[in-house]
Image 1 (cartoon, rainbow, N blue to C red):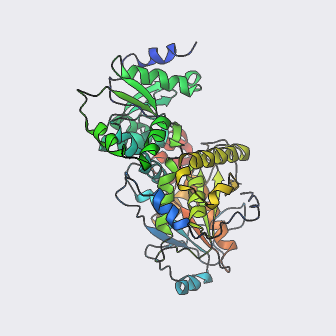
Image 2 (image 1 turned 45 degrees about the horizontal axis):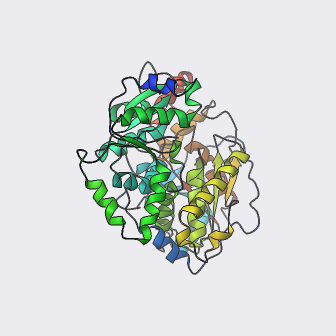
Image 3 (image 1 turned 180 degrees about the vertical axis):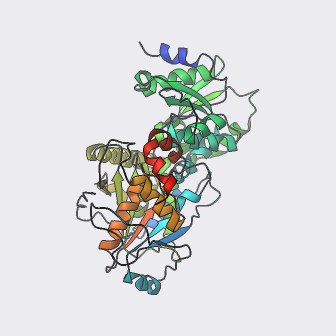
Length: 449
């Protein structure tokens, strides 16, 4: 989760300013009609929606196919064997080739983990439509923690912007993983958990410090709303002029963006991905799919479901809940859909999305639920088996959860017409931090599998 800020001073006095501002997967049954029906205006609507500037030069990504030998998938809720996996790095997507693959369980995996060496795939997608708006307003950005903070720091540095990152808790003795990347690329301030709990005040206090006497603070949603007014007016030229004005004539602006980039605009990059995947030479628009993803904030899952709905695709999105309850994720889904419809209402004339407010995502529990961030015995070894046999690295907190469900669904659908697709969201750098926390689990790797 995260927040964004602009050019300005370093972290000296940051904490004082902040302190002064304070005194076995249970599949849930999808409701009838949740898989979208094709709409004639879907392609036109999405084309208008995606007609904008992007951070990524193109939406392309690699698609691989993970294949299991017979009886090697495992049984529901029990141990999985990944010792004999095969990874087809150049699968064919024609109907004839897909029918041939029905002999043994398999699933396709969208390799968004390969988009950037340091930025998680889901973070890159969220920032895809968000960063250009910030650049239009000559702002820099900062985040709170974890993979999101690292993604903001790296992405901003690559564009010549400064990031100010508020990280929860205390500075670790040894910097590693995302924490190390955040520190190398951004300006980090550590915030006590008691102060971090009130995020809005914390962020506003730090943003005021960065802005100084000559600057001002803007919440990202304000910029987002302003950008929409330019969609149908000539003021879009003004925004570009504003972006090009030098700091000498332009007051410093500090932009705050929600933790985790959990805003409606973050969904745009995910819809762009769905539009790419639905091309006829890839996954196509007619084939029924079960799309699996791990869910932290749930934003990526909602974006996938919205993209499928907008294009009228017969794709069912299933998200493995990792950080919240079913009620929490459903509430997040309603909020994001509501914000999305409000922000892009000028494109929504006579569109089926007007009739939807939730129920698009199939939220499910992980096989072995646990407190968010915890790793169970045997999961590190499972990641090792997968890496050694396929060349695909998953992490035990996020992407292993999606992998387990994709493997289970691929067994259930092996003889059916529905194909299973997993979105690999990244998470590689998170393993380094886990190795510090779960030393006993990682010591076992020294002896091999």
